[in-house]
Image (cartoon, rainbow, N blue to C red; front, side):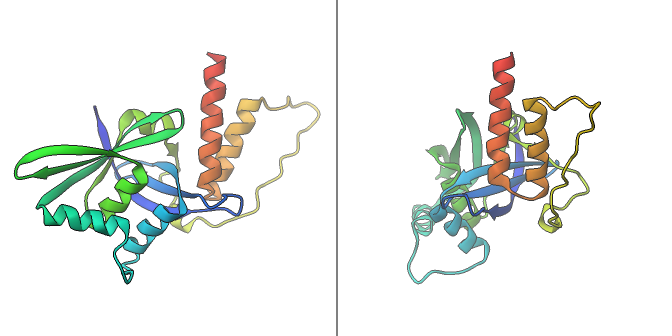
Length: 198
């Protein structure tokens, strides 16, 4: 199985998220972004470590890191290797005394551990092909200026857009506005609609 390395681009939320966040991963040598919806606790665990904020008592992911260190285990890398029915699956690969092994886990937990152990994060090519969202190479998502979406008016001689075309336009708008939770939902709707047409 082939993998591409990714970095954490950021965490985002929207008022309608219901407490969920989008963890946005970006290809190291590419232009695709992979939004993964995660819970507030996991988002907090990732954000605290990225900001180098030390809580007064160890959090769950700190405990896991300390446990790995205590048994002299080396976390080799994190693999996000499956996407089934909208759910991402991950593995923590590690070695102890020269013996390699892996643990199945949620991507949010794997990433929270990766930032604590400075372990590289990889995504299976077929996962990023299916769920990745391409962005303009010259565009830095962290500095995209937010603007009001342009209202398109249809002239009398233009044909109305199909549902698929409208969803694809909405997806591009969501990416531009950095609303990765909406982008993830639209991506899933587009995949489902394309599947029904085949």
